[in-house]
Length: 238
Image 1 (cartoon, rainbow, N blue to C red):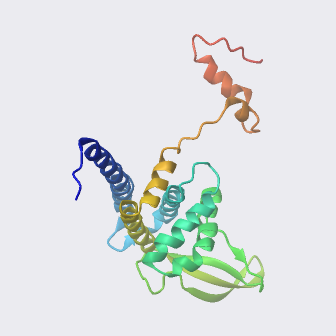
Image 2 (cartoon, helix red, strand yellow; image 1 turned 90 degrees about the horizontal axis):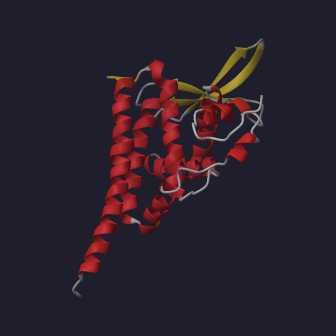
Image 3 (cartoon, rainbow, N blue to C red; image 1 turned 45 degrees about the horizontal axis):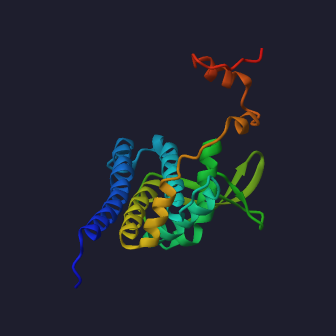
């Protein structure tokens, strides 16, 4: 073996610190924080029913982040694509069924809860519908399984297939997925590099000019900001 000089030692030390910091970020700042939070949401049977909605929001917000890091994304685009890629890869290593159905889960749950705080329902091409039944339990066998029912809704008879979502099981599977991703970061240089590239570009700058084009922003938004800058030459429009 060739002798390593001080420069080599320094570079090796820096490389190890980068790897350990990434693993630390996933283990301490994400996984441990989630565990501390979900401990407050749970009892001996799993996540309490009154916390199911917020639990799903939190899980999918973190899936968005990890999907971005896994893909090495540096722009605000491709959130859905990257998140589903992460789910199929790492949740799929925990339970192979996630490899098959993560696209639908993400669309129906993440998009539903982020925008209207409930899951979406899908009208299938055969005229039947797809929805969820939520449970607080950890039953692997019934998790993600379908059950057919005939229901009367808004004065019409419909056939609904309800997918059983064991939210406590999803949470535990997600924790395992984080561990698998952390392992890959340490042992796969490409995945490690993508993490670093994306992590360093998370805070995306925008411009006042661009924000002023948004219909939800009013002149008063910037009046408020500039009005608190004592040396500003800004003149508010009245």
